[in-house]
Length: 409
Image (cartoon, rainbow, N blue to C red):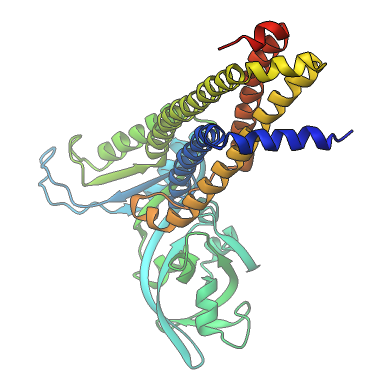
C-alpha cells in the first residue's frame, strides 16, 4: 500500500539537505552523461564505416590494371596491361572453389535519350553476378541474365534517377532508350543504397558492349566475391595468390605495384574490425570506470548521510520505529536520488549527441547514438549500487541502541 507519509518525509529530507542531494545527484548524472556520450561516439564511428561500404559486398575483391613501371623478362617498362575474356575464364576455372560471385566491368560514357529528354550517364557492362556484388536492388523488371550474355542482346537496366530524368510521365520498363545512337530495351530499374551517383548508372551485358564498342574481348576490371566461408586471413591469402598469379600471367615484376592492382575488402574489413574492437575495449574501460566512480561516489555520500542522521535514527527508535521502517526511508531516498539523477544524465547525454551530431561528421562520426537498453542497464547498475550503498549503513545504523545513537557526535 502507498504510504503518503513515508514519501512526504523522504521529500522533506531531500529538501532539507539540498546541497547533499545535489552532490549525490551530480555524481550519478555525470557518470551516466559521460557513459552515454562515449558509447554514442563509438556507435557514430561504426555507422561511418557501415555507410562507407553500404552498397558493396564485404567479400569483394577488385582487380584493376595499369602500366608496368619496371622492365621484366626482357619486356620494357611502360607496357599497358589489359584484361581479356580469357583472363576472366582463367580465374573462374582456377579458383572456382574460392569464388562465390564473378563479374567483369567495362566502363563507357554515353548520352542517353528518350523522346525529348536526354542526359549523360556512366554505362557499366557487367555479368549477372554484378547485382550481388554491388547490392543492386531491382525494383521493376529484372536484371541482366545469362541469356542476355549468350545472345548479346541490347538490353539495359537503369538506375532509379535515370528513369526519373528521362521517363518523366511513364515507366521505363519495356521502352527503348537511345544510348549514343544505339537502341536498348529497358528491362529493369534498380535502387542502390550507395546514393544518387550509383542510381544514375546504366547496366548492359558485357558481351553486348564488347560487340558494339570495338568488337573485341577487352574488359576494364574484374570483380570477385570470394567464398564467405573464408576467414579474413584466408581471404587475404586468396587475394595475394591472385596478385602473384596475374603478375606471372602477364610477365610483370613481383615488386611492380601499378600494373596489377588487387583491392581486397577483407584487408580493409579486418583492419576496421580490429580498430573497432580496440576502440570498443577502450570505451568500455572508460565507460565502466566512470560508472565505478559513480558507484564509489554515491556509496561514500550514502555512508555520510547515514552517519549524519544517526541521532535522528536514535530518536525514531526511541519513539518505536522499527528497523525495517528506518532502512526503508534511507533506502528509498537513495534509490530516488539515483533514479532521478540518472534519468537527467541520460536526457542531457542524448541532447548533447543530438546537438553536436551533425558537426561530428567532419571527424568521421556519423549519427552518434546509443541504444536505450545499454544506457538503461548502466542507470539500473547505479540505482542498484545506490540501493546497496544506502542499505548497508542504514541496516547497521538501525541496529544501534537509541541511547548510543543519541549520544553520537
